[in-house]
Image 1 (cartoon, rainbow over the protein chains, first blue to last red):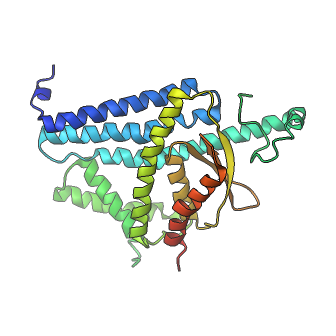
Image 2 (cartoon, rainbow over the protein chains, first blue to last red; image 1 turned 180 degrees about the horizontal axis):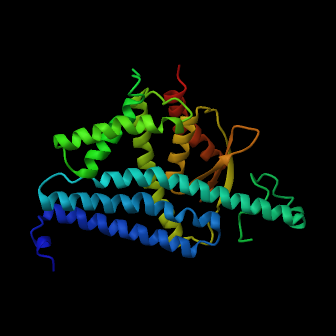
Image 3 (cartoon, rainbow over the protein chains, first blue to last red; image 1 turned 30 degrees about the horizontal axis):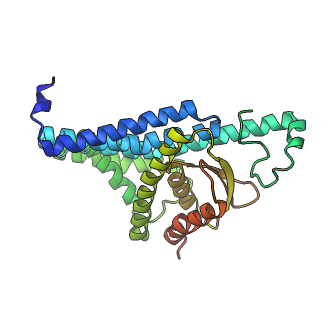
Length: 133
Length: 165
């Protein structure tokens, strides 16, 4: 047992524990989403909760922990938040556009399949986003 | 206020704060190093930015928009978690098309980042030949509700911030 942990006051250890539990539960659910969701376009939403609420609560817990332990304001974790919030949306958009491009190319190679799907005229993209191709 | 050697004061300020946070110190030496970085980096990176820096107008509207998005992100997190845990096979995911009025590149960039940060929605692209946005929604029940939400909650403030004369 880390001796530093025992010197932590209750007002700090309680929110830290709750935030860590919430954060790790969210990260686990996000990873579970990658396993359970059937289609790529759905799986892309799984990591989104990991990077927002998951990292968010773990980083807040880290800020409280080190601030309480060292009796000074430790907030450089904010930078991680900023960098994640700047980069993750761009990555999600790139992955999404790549997948859409791939499916459009696949449809162009197999024109018979798209002829069967003529009933779905209201769809934005002319390929099925329901089941794995 | 745009000086020749300080093209975007807000960016320089952010860089200085980043430097001080990284070093966890406000010693004068770090302030000096950070200021050099904050002034030199925007000047060196200027050829990489084809557009002029957007002036920071309506900070109150921007703050309200960011705060509201944060609440929306937390709310969506729990919604998406619930669906992954209990209804992973039956979820109605779909692409929808949202007509946009926003034209400003900075506004569109911020809109895409906000939409992509919110779990359950991913921006795909602006469809060619129109200003429509293709959006993938994780759990779609009412297409019109999503279109209205994006247009009133996100797009209106952004138009106010970036396109207001």
